[in-house]
Image 1 (spheres, rainbow, N blue to C red):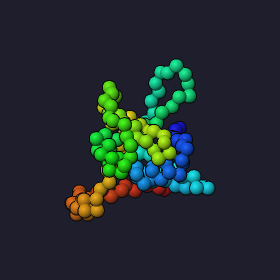
Image 2: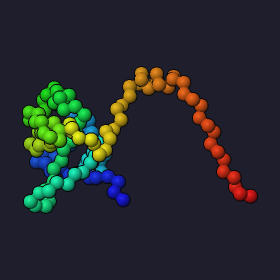
Image 3: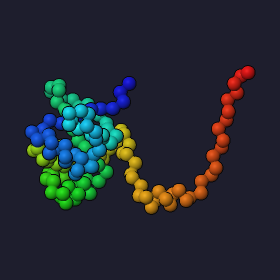
Image 4: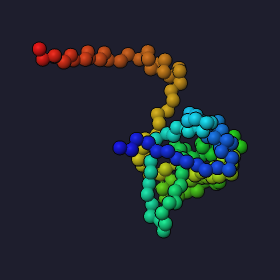
Length: 146
């Protein structure tokens, strides 16, 4: 039924924020026409919280280690709020070049979606390919019934 999500971030400087998503956060994307970039996101999840009105939505990026994330952003000169400890995770907000803020948090709860697998270096991949694996069984052929 649902096989993805599309998030829209409104910005006063969309070009700068697109470059930030690509160059700083390392998101890959495509030009869907006319220079409009759409970025792929890692596995995502959605939560519904009670609130006094509808049509209020928030975007948070998730990370495995908020301190590592904050250190990386500091090296790149990206302004982030001090880490807050919440019941549900460790939270910061990063400021985009266009002035908007996006929350980033390290969940303390189980994730509904599993993080993307870590990239394996070429050396590790080569070492794994040299590891002996048990031979697989040949596929069974189906009889044609004739």
